[in-house]
Image (cartoon, rainbow, N blue to C red; front, side, top):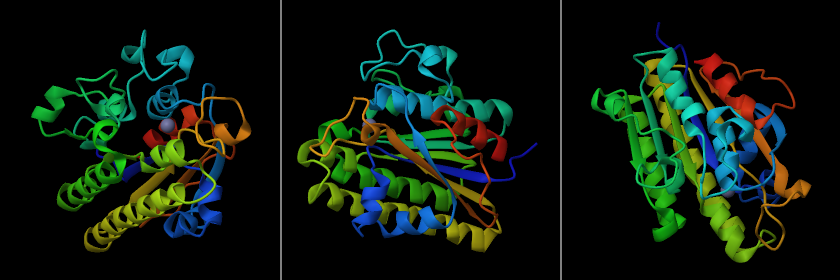
Length: 269
Ligand SMILES: [Zn+2]
């Protein structure tokens, strides 16, 4: 059994999609929003990166994964494997890749990580990770490194299932608010990275006749003044875009919930 479709999941932390599109600074995301499966989503409380990404990436809720904050104390990630691990269990020869600059998602020496390190799969060439520290070095540069490594990996080996993560918009939202200026500059930078990733996939589809699915989501929104964690609809607002390349856009169910995306992705492989 080999997967029929290759999938890239793009996580954009703290992205207020409609505000980004309305600003005119997110041209790629605007095009994908209108030419894909699309659904709004409402994320669970608290609207915090740790629990929300864990839900999105493991397909379980907080009752199962136990992540309630960004410290990951008392987490139960052992009973909530990430989607790359789950997919590797379904297809033993599957190749997976993850690149991220927020250490709890991926860094084996940090809390978590949500994406299991899977040393033996790495040794066997079935899994690879690209770990950066945006908390220390800033996401403006780290997001670029992460996206470029993902493009290189897609180009060279076309993994079956990949996760790539950018956090520059969230960082700018916290520092400057989400009404004007820096938040939208950060979104424009990330939008260009998304376009670069899309192009890398288009190139493979044209050359190799592959089927790809690009999935994009976020973990929470922001308040106008910047910051999140509360229960306002603005902070809870998320979305999912699922865009087929070389294949039709999927028809996932409307009003999909954050913990249901993993199941849809695994069913698409
Ligand atoms: Zn976040």
